[in-house]
Length: 257
Image (tube, rainbow, N blue to C red; front, side):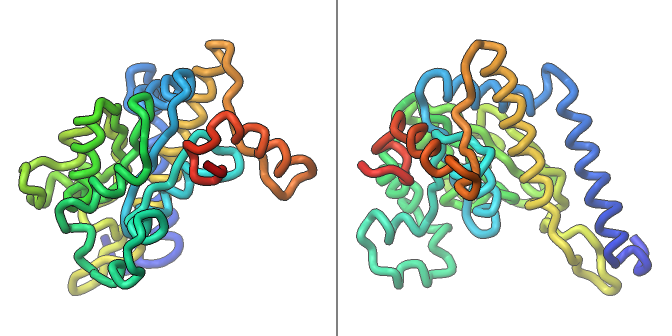
């Protein structure tokens, strides 16, 4: 890539190319987006909750899935911060920059969520190798959950596993959605080395919304109205959302236990 491509137009061009590749992959009835949608739709039909987990900037994709207008109601956002918010740890525990690499952290986050067997885990990580990510996927599979991963296959294939099991997120998940991000995530190469402008959030949002849209289609075809949030900033939206949430009271963290 030439230095002339390191600008807004260069990122738009490369970013749109990645989005178009992802969109094209969704045209197949046998594709990964369709398989992801089937997991989501099955979770909703069986009264499950979608437990979404990520660390670092992958939390932006978690937010895209859990608890937003136009998104599915039965969703939870899991986070390392749950150790403080729900587990009683001192806030200072979050100051450890290597916390997501320590063993046992994911197991505690899982236990604090109190998921049911019918719940689906959506685990998001660009590298797919950090200990807490792999540990969460393994824990979910051990407890009988289906696991949907959103990751960069280019990145995860280019780096060694760091979990003691020698496994990566993509090795464990039932379905893997490739976010098309390059190794290291940044897209535009700089003269003399290094890159600028990360891609995984842009493509991760695309993958999440395509999977949710396809899941909604599957639910409608089965005669099930998708339980979807309406913006709280339109008349009746807040009240309508409360009605939908009552079905999952005590199971999603936006409701009282």
